[in-house]
Length: 401
Image (cartoon, rainbow, N blue to C red; front, side, top):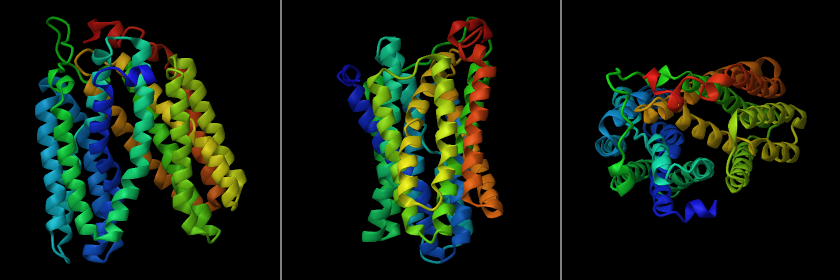
């Protein structure tokens, strides 16, 4: 891990990329707080946050495809400025602003959210000279750093909102997103990056033309179901126990477990191959289903969540590295974007399913169902093992382009 960080440009690219992604990580929950402050309605806040999330998920592959055709600089600069400006415009809306204006600007911010993660991941092979071990380590390291954004983003912007105002916090978020994206786009490796051209005479295809990318997207969808299901189940368990205040710290402990697991994975060079991926998915399934045994004990749930979270960052690192290997030439950025969209779609379904299960049978059954999603993901990985090994597709075969 340290050798990768010492490589020229790696630490700087990670730091600048994460700066803007901290704003992305904090945007969803901050939108809820801000819209409620402006309108006095949690219903309106939920609608606006949903509009932002759906727009992000829907537009991500389109922006990724643009990067694959035009390069990173123009797309990142334009989307970063557009998203940052949309958040600044949101912050300028007065109290009592109409729902349509709030929803429109939040949707614009989501649709233009810069594809920072996808762009960073496409840089690793060129930046690290094609060294596969170093590339796997870089993906594992990025997963660790990304976990930090999930912890620091919501905490930082919500703290600023509490100390000053939600309006100022939204404005700062927009400024950070815009400035951070421009700073990343100005870096030499980002400006110099060009996608691999399709094979001579071949028509450019969607990134989903690669069976391996479709398999990763399906796996990420089921992982999204698991992640959202656990978030809802923890909330339900603490609410039923009359300890709702413990929900935030418990989810933070879960994130800490992921962070620690990611550090270990990065130090070991990341997961290697389909076998490791299946083992990670089965471990996630078992450790998250076992959360049902904690009952209403905050201490027991905290301990089990720490263990369960340890596989999340390593999994994201593994799927990122596989996606880069399996993408058809000239579609890498779009491929990474599709996995993000699939994860977001799974999160939406998982939250709805877990909520219904928690209402019907309690948090325990929601935990078990979430773990079952991990079993489904492992089954998908086994069934599609050939595609995940690159048999006849991706970089193993440019004829598919």
